[in-house]
Image (tube, rainbow, N blue to C red):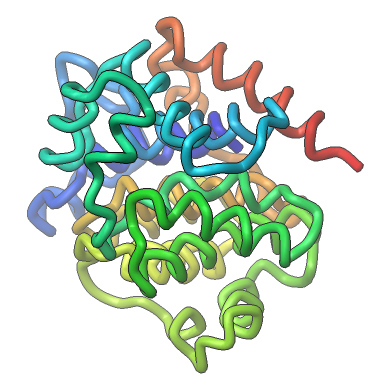
Amino acid sequence: MLVQLAVGDAYGATFEYAPASFVAAGNTLADYSCIPPRPGRYTDDTQMTIAIAEALISGEPWTPENLADRFFNAFHRDPRAGYATRFHALLREVRDGQDLLARLRPNSDKSGAAMRAGPIGLLPTVADVLHHTEVQARITHDTPLGVEAARAAALAVHYCHNDHGPVSEVATWVDDRLGSTGRWAEPWTGSVGAQGWMSVRAALTALGSSTSLREILRTSVAFCGDVDTVAAIALAAASCSTQVTDDLPEVLYADLENDSYGRDFLHELDARLFAWARP
């Protein structure tokens, strides 16, 4: 999950909010070469997902305080760009997770809570997924759509991981579990804005469109807009499904960053995460 999510994030970052003509010409999955000098470098989508995964594996109480510490630590051990400007500045200024909690104004409906929610979908029941997702979402995105978008992203992983049905029906299943009267089942078209519900609905549309990781990634990016988040959410879920073929180009795996918290670290954390999730 985490490796594929990072590939989607890093590849999508090449095209985030780029002109449609640039996306149409360059979205070939050939490489990361459009973003020198650090091609293959993932963004905040992956870094915050790492924090969530590490919190789950640790078995520590699922509290805002512990999660804020995880967010703080993940950033300060590996500072990187990609965060929203104000949140990035806040992470740089605070002393620890408690200081972060005290200074946050969690009134956003953007995609931050949804982009990091994927690992929560590995929890055993829908009720577990909904509860854990809400707790982490309210730290930064304590709005109705901020919470619901995060829940939808985590439920997509839960559906795929547990093989609840055809991947083509994932959006309808998510919609039913959230009682959203069609919000998530309606196919997305056009450019994706900053709001979390937009990224998640586009990701569900891409996820349901194919049983090929390559095509799901290509479709995610082709929407234009906030496509690194769309691709991260879609590939997190798709990579958990036995119905979806992992046919991503080898170059995207090989050229994914591999510093201290890069590809090898993500492979190892993936193994720990799925061992933890195993019944």
